[in-house]
Amino acid sequence: MLPTPGPLELVIILVIALLILGPGKLPDVGAALGRSIREFRKASSDIQDATRMDAPPAGRSSSTPMSASPAAPPTVGEPVSPPAETRSEPSAEPKP
Image (cartoon, rainbow, N blue to C red; front, side):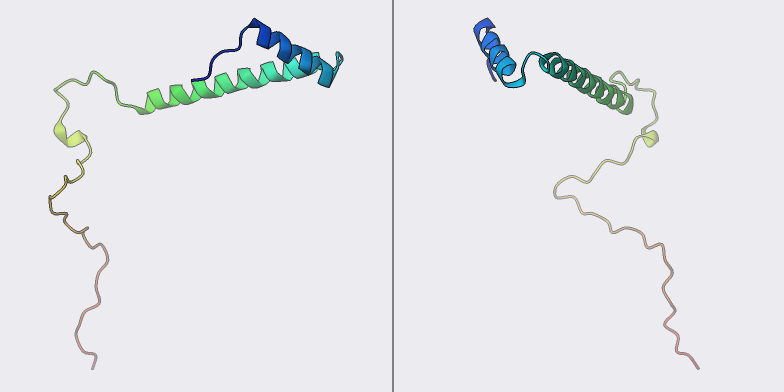
């Protein structure tokens, strides 16, 4: 985990930014950085909300029928049945 910068490091970063960008551009860069952080936080909270809606509730009651849940995948060593054929095969009768 990265350590958080202390007050001295923040002052050094601010002085370097002031020298590179100049006093006229620094407020614009700060505002753009603030907007970017705000948009990032909003997007991450939207993703968290969407995953909470998709996930089933934690406290399911035992009265829920078992047929409503999806089929469990086969375990290791259990034979897997082939999928059912849905298309019809042509007949093997010879044509006259």
